[in-house]
Image (tube, rainbow, N blue to C red):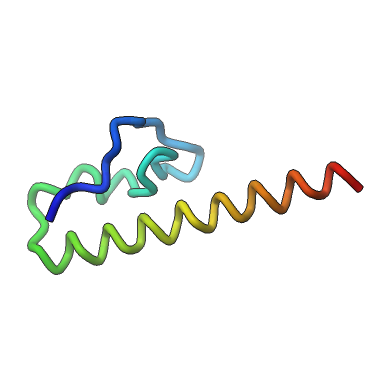
Length: 65
C-alpha cells in the first residue's frame, strides 16, 4: 500500500501530520507495518483529516455570529 503522505509534512501539537493525518508513530513505523496495519493507519489518517477539516469549518462559522 502506498503511504498517504502528500509531501506537506508538519506535526501539530497533537503530533499528527497536518498534511496526511498520520500520527508521529504511524509515520515512523510505516516501513515496518504489514499491509493490514498500513491500511488501518491510512484509514485512520483520512478520518483524522476529515475531522480536523470539520472542526476548522465549525470554528470559522462561530466567528461569523
